[in-house]
Image 1 (cartoon, chains in turn purple, brown):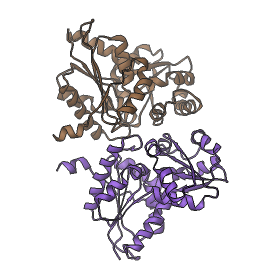
Image 2: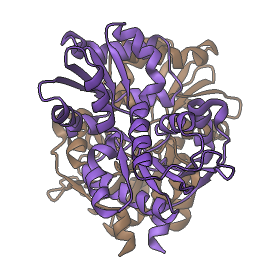
Image 3: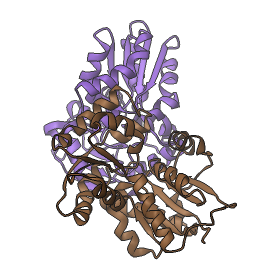
Image 4: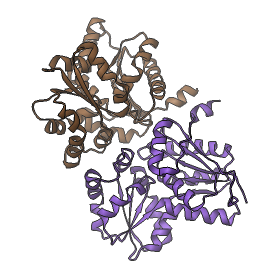
Length: 273
Length: 273
């Protein structure tokens, strides 16, 4: 048993869909979350910048004595995971490989679609991860830059969101995919709208849910699960800007389970000290 | 005559609508532009953070020996202008006051609408600037968080953009405004779509164009205009991330006039040295 917290980070609020899954399936785990709200979005930034930001955040989480890190951001998983793994000894779990594994399992005809940010799609991380697991798979990827702003604006349903989704998904649906990976941790909040647009024949795979499978397996294998009673369980949320805005979003992502204790921290200042 | 360059900054590409106006009306002026593309958007960040970023950028421009600074970002104009003016001796011109002055001039019934980012609208900078110029004016403001992502995604026209605009503008149009200020330097690119939604009875005031009136007047008064022949005129664009992406956007904003010479610079590193 190991009651140290899990470290989870994202460029902003999106990683809270992963926190929601952890709270549901590993309720005894303590959590230190970092949302880089001062520097969101990562999806339009360069690979070098994303690697630098990810390393700063990992340093912060390691200083908080986390027992494992979940990179709950697809862009950072695509671009910074291997550099983080080479730097730290503790388990570091990204969102991409688990989602690809699940997609390969559920896909009936091996035709898999992926949607994500510009940076994630341009990195080609999903197609290459899927091909490693299932070499004959056909993968169609599409960048959807408006979906994060739509979620952050609270437009989880409605005509505008559906019109944007229909336009983004048109081309990959024409390729007759049978499975669609939501390659961005914001997108699970759009699941209802997405299912309406793709119809019942397409299975939607949510990377937030898949990553918790991988996390649970890793914690079990390395005997890092916390005591199930967890009387001292603790959840802390750090952001780099606008804690009030994060708390408002947190309620949207975690509903009643969000206690709203959000602290602001400046990673730059920390580095300067 | 003073052939030193003008310094212009924005959180990203939006300020290029101001550059476009300067190139058109003050063609002899040299320009040093800074787009904070690593930290865009400013519209969702806290006032304190926006002031810190603006001061870093002004330091950078002053080191480039600019003769005046145009804060071509509404969010920074709303939140950082007075702190910048108290710190530097050179003329510092924001976008808000010039746009309000022009709106007060053209408004027939003193009913003025303003659209902008969350941070700009929450700052109440437009209503208070308008009331100073025209105390009896009635001002209706509305935050439009999706418009910057729509512009950055190249959706300047079309059903989705018009549907979003119609929804955002519905309430302020009901208040029977006769003038609408585009309180964000990205929005001039949406002028056609906006005019279609608001109709001919509403005059659209573009802050990019109004700020160049104010800039020209200031340069004349202080005898800072450059030599009209300007054989040594020079335009340089700096960004904090993704110069390729900026160059692509630059072509959208400045069309044929954008020469694509974009340099990347890290303000944080500069500060650390």
